[in-house]
Image (cartoon, rainbow, N blue to C red; front, side, top):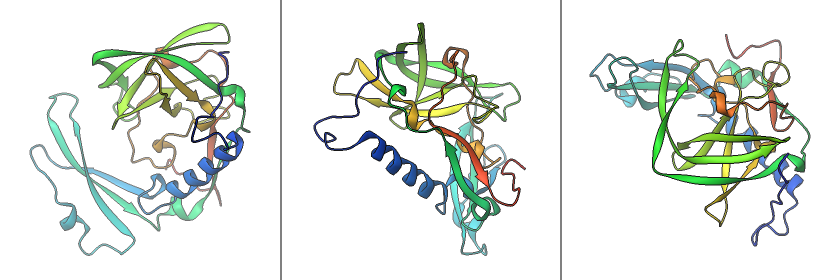
Length: 246
């Protein structure tokens, strides 16, 4: 495994990494259960080709707990821009039945430093998505992340998520102790543009683990680790036998 690195930096020197992780866990719970958190998404509705729906009109006469937002994507076959609406309900069954997200104990050995090589102009790599029936969508990958884990070299592809590198990865825990379709991890940049930090303690269940209305990207082959990544979130836990996937 690559050499663990410290979280410490000039503005973090007095912060205990385990305490910072607990704070991250608390913020994660708050975000998941917020009025527009992953648990609150109850419907994603795509408009007919060429139409741009109005969120205010769609939200009229809805309960006060409902928020309507817009989104867009590129249609797979024609490559045309599609517009849609998302309906969020702060009183959704998933919110009411949610208990917690189980996680592995904090482990500093899973805080890894990696090399980062930017690609001028970025490149586009095909990512399969859960609800595209085997189709793929090209996402911009700004550079290559290289590291060695347990004696094996990897070159990982993290795509640009609104200016942040988001790694979609898989490992042998998927479908057993962790979410079956893989997990997500935000890549932390450093003062050295050629180095990044992968803190797998902050690996998290993707949005589709909390609502079946998301269409999450799946790990490409190069992002699949050969050994179990026993760090980060495992699975959501719901009360009363509730299943967020149905």
